[in-house]
Length: 287
Image 1: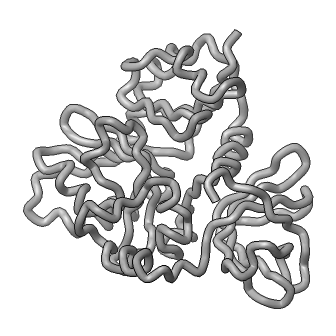
Image 2 (image 1 turned 30 degrees about the vertical axis):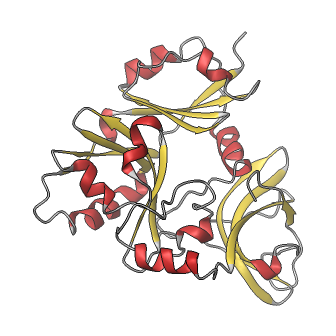
Image 3 (image 1 turned 60 degrees about the horizontal axis):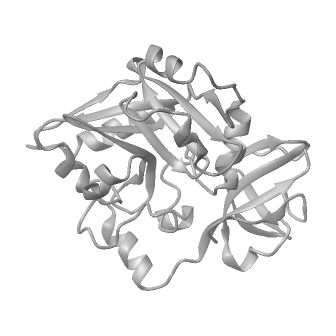
């Protein structure tokens, strides 16, 4: 019996970067090392502004003539406008191809990595490993549907909960540009290369890392079902502004969330208003 379940992820979209200079162009724009892409399908990376603030978090897939970028659909117009400023004479084409692709998430409920026995490789342009229990499939709708035909469905809420438990950030238009990669734990998620050389925002990101001035990190919390929050919402420790919500979901009668929080508050109960104590710290697998 299959132990994997899938859900459609219509809120994700696809940007293609194609042309003779596609990889070298992205090497100068993203936080991770594109030389690793062929051996790491689903390579995690971020696009940042010159101030080192994250504009989009991406999953990468290699294709014959370039690279596919998977990210939240709502962020695509701003990302395309940002990347277009740096094309100059590079031989690249940037295109929103979301309407050509269907994207599904595969959630493993049994042994970690067991999905590898249930999904044949090579059937989709993008089979992207998100974690030992989460897989992203991107391809033509008919191909994705046939690939998952024998598997039961799950809900997007289950996928979101697993993503939060794995400690993977995701941005919204209202939170794009708020944080540097280290605040979102992207360095701990192997999404930042400190050896690859220059890229947009690299100077700020590298200086923060080498000077050890990481004063805020993304932490996980849980709270009661009536403690609804939205991305970007402020959280308090006592009367002090402690941090901001990155993403949140409902899970079995509780709210699960990730928030960028000052490390001096990491052991505190947090609230949506001064003096509130709705949210209790929870563990992340890598922190």
